[in-house]
Image (cartoon, rainbow over all chains, first blue to last red; front, top):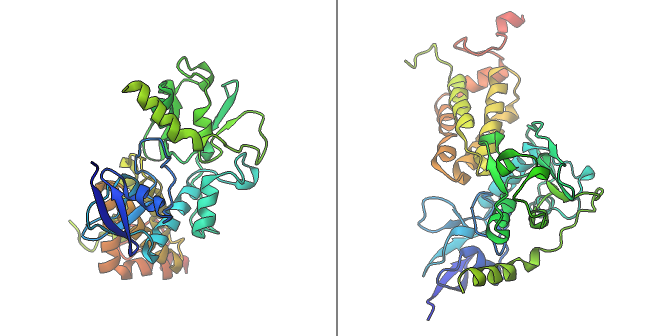
Length: 239
Length: 114
């Protein structure tokens, strides 16, 4: 028997099963909490800080994607303060590298763009850092444009957890952090990449894309299948 | 020793430079926020800032401190916030008079301008 916890989110009384996260329970009850690094079917890392919520008696803001529900928990998912923090985080993402939507393959199918629209980020106030981080187009089917990368690490996680190849990883730290294939060898020369394309499908921006796609032609389609893929995959590992 | 030969804007900038260097890059507020705070502090110390930058500095400091994943990012804005609290006038002098009271910052002093 799974224990059920009663908690409140934004004043609404909701029920969640033991082991569920605040984010899962909120979404089950149609309470929208913005996310970027989270993807149903992948492990969570709590890196994008967009799903931070206020939990009563907690000293810090907690990421909803990694916080398990508990009995009597009082969660505030929407406040003026949280909205300001979320807008600031999205602004920081926009000024980190190069996110010029008008010339991006993911225009109109981009989670960063959707977030900005949803949270009301219509301009940025800070100077763009935009280091020249380059493009790796050595793979015959796909390419990675690091200028569009937000380091959500979805590609790293899906490659490791679902495909089992672990081609992607993160190298460097701070502003120098990059996603890399096989310790930094060109993607096209990767001996571990199976060319399955899962990383491309889960990339929230235009950083990973199929070759031959023009501006706004890089729509990604396979994300809804991920949770069932995960269940199937876990079933094979632990029958 | 922190005496009158030390510029508080420069102190804040020094600590922010350290945090920017040490940031691991996993979470966005620390990875980009420390860099942006460092840019803002550099602009103030060079006499290139406007009064709106003080507001930007305070707001961004609060966001980075509240939303960063680990202690590095959470503590990174503390030197900024405490120097702003106790030595706000030094910041204002850098911006309004384009002068560094301690003569540390690399900006032209009012004397040099006139």
